[in-house]
Structures are given as C-alpha cells and as structure tokens.
Amino acid sequence: MTPRTQAQNVIYLKHLKYEYRNRGRAFIGMETMAKYSAGSDREAFFQAYYELEVINQRILEHMSKPLGVDYQANWFMRSGLNIFSYVSWRFVSPQQLVDIIIPYIPKLQEMESLANPAHKLFFAYIVAQEKAQLDASRAAKQESWDSGAKILREFTEKQAKVFKTSL
Image 1 (cartoon, one colour):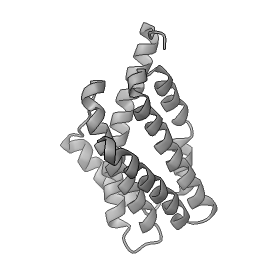
Image 2: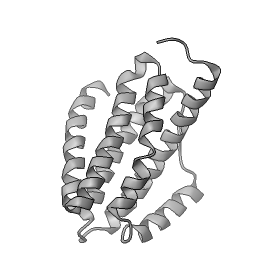
Image 3: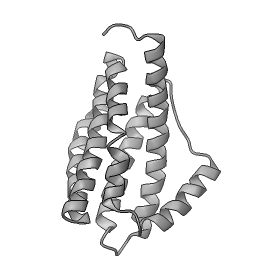
Image 4: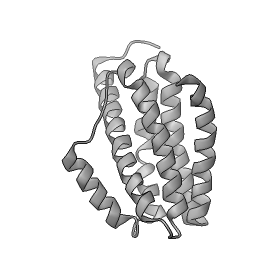
C-alpha cells in the first residue's frame, strides 16, 4: 500500500471516528430496542442486532488502542438514545434501516481501502457486519422480522467463532 496523502488521511480518520461513534450509538440503541421489543414480532430481530453490537463493541475495544481512537457516549447522549430507541422500536421499518445502511457502506469501503494493511482483518469485518445488517434488513422487509434475525444470528455465530480465538 502506498502511503496515504494528507487528504486521504483526513478522510480515513473522519470515517474511522464516525464508525466508532456509530457503533457506540448502535449498541445503546439496540440494547434498548431489544429490551422493550420483548414479546413483539420484532423481538428476535432487535435481540439479534443487539447481540451483533455486543460483539462489535468487544472488537472495537480491542482495536481502539492500535487505531488510536475510542468513543464513550456521555450521559446526555446515552439518555437521548435510550429515549429515542424506547419510542422508535415500534415504528422503525426495515426499509428505513436499508435507507440508512446503503449510503454508509461506500464510506466504510473507502475507509477499508485507506487502512493500514496490518488492520485488514478488522476493516474487512467492519464492512462485512454492515453488509450483514443490510441483508438482514432486506430480509425483514421482504419476508419477516424473524428472517432478518436469522441472518444476523448466523453472521454473529460465524464471527464469534473467528474472533474468539483472536481476541
């Protein structure tokens, strides 16, 4: 890999910091959605998504020092996310999730292309888990929330085996 230009470095760091914040917010939101969707037709989906975010947090925490980045939501952000998630789990549609994820994947791919080769596995995972979220959201839209949950669980189980030995 050729060294990044200053402009590429700015883009890489911007995407990397955003991804850490995004995963932190997703963890908080999915934890709340999984809790409050219990007993609904969306329970399995939000629980599976939360379980994916638990693994994501472990991986991000493991990589924070080598990458020189971290994110901890403050009390205000956590409270706002909890309130938003408590209300929104009832109304969010799979299409809304698809619409959020699709434009985000190219940013992750750009970040992956600019990353240090020593961190290739980490960035490949970041892109793969986002694609799994997209596939799951599409399945939830086309079939059912449970179909989407199945995709998330399969991805999580596969990744847990891979990273269990490396973390």
